[in-house]
Image (cartoon, rainbow, N blue to C red; front, side, top):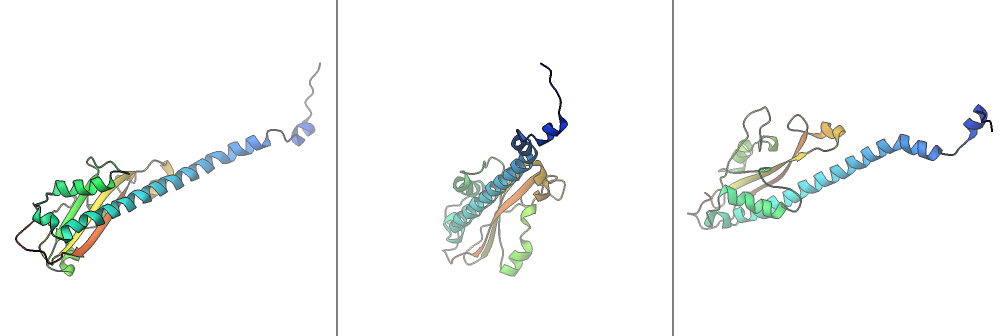
Length: 185
């Protein structure tokens, strides 16, 4: 039996077109799907970190942290216990707590969240653990460096050569007028 090659018949044949079209579209589809999934998980992580900071900040605002003599490590552990469902806190979460005499002074003394945590080729990271006294303004910043997985999402990175995205939780408030004479250590 002799096989003939018929170009016209070959061009009209529609078998396998779906597989070829899928092979052309699939990489773009899966990259977009991966970007959506990673962005969603990253934003959820930032939400959980923000909620954890707000919850832990209540201990500072009400004076519970001061009366217990809560250390910086214990306060970080408090945040990590609340956020441990979505992030690994071993060295990845950095906490900055600062108090000042007024909100204006606190605003000038509080660094950008990009400067709280590991310094990547820039100035050393800001560190502070000052819970403040009764009726004093306090700012709390907690940061977590998210490792970007999808290679084309590096424009959304903001630290470590755009290979990581620093997400943050922030709280600024005035302490309640709790009994003085206690402080964080």
